[in-house]
Length: 420
Image (cartoon, rainbow, N blue to C red; front, side, top):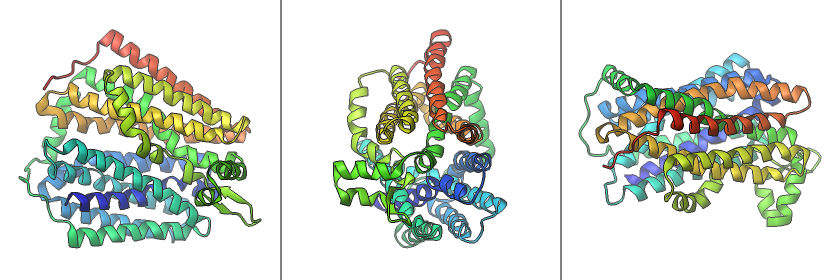
């Protein structure tokens, strides 16, 4: 059952990120403004991260398999509708439906991994799960990018086929993991979250995380593919990749345009999944000797450096974009696991799950604000002929976060980690 669940996760991330990373390029090609794009991005991410607060409760009460099937029944027609509508309202409603389906799905496979592992193999189990997320998240944009260069409908169809395969795997091979079914109601769930948020220091910390960490984090993923595709010399990027890795490798990330010039496709390189797959274990080993909060602050500095280099890629060598993405990925690998570990360990043992569930609120705050703030800002800088400025602002935002979190710990005190 463990491997069945992980196979489903690879396919879902393939479909989700295959659509999402290229979505800014899609709306731009249809002629929509950056403000319109930002509105859709923010609402899409809001649903993706708000619904897990309650969908896990339904899964615990009614069974993972039933709720998985419900998510597919929302996912599949929504993706197919992208092939039939190009109006702003149609695209927005369709993406909201996809966000709704993704929000239902999000906690279910992690929940399956949790109940199919034990204390002897849980670290390995979740390590494999995290790797599968990045396998799907890396190959989805590559395949979708190659297909959308022919027709966007082919890219959407590939995502729909992945969901269809997930549906068949779930029907025929997924068996409900043995466990006690919980009787917790939604009302109790919200009351429990209220208990966690009644700790004003913890609540303030979550708000700061949302504004100063998750907001620029999601803005990177909202904008990087569009920036590469629209503002960098993608033919030069192809030549640079070919010069280092050879033509076959470069062709994998590119497509010939109507003039026969091969260009790197923005969404194929504008993510961190392939770097995380290679380096996450090594980074975790290095930083396990350092306390979570200092590690988090170091990671923010590294991520800010990556964002600054992304901006420099337009005025300097285009291939600097690879260095910028690399540094941002290193920052992500340091910050994201350590801050989630920190939240788990500052909670009393009996409330660890409750505190981690509340962490979704921080992600939701940042994800919701990211499109409204940074995608719109990118549009204004682009209109002024300076699209790279958005990365300098984002880098300053993350550097400001270092001061904010240092000040929080300095004046409010660091949270006390539980020993057991």
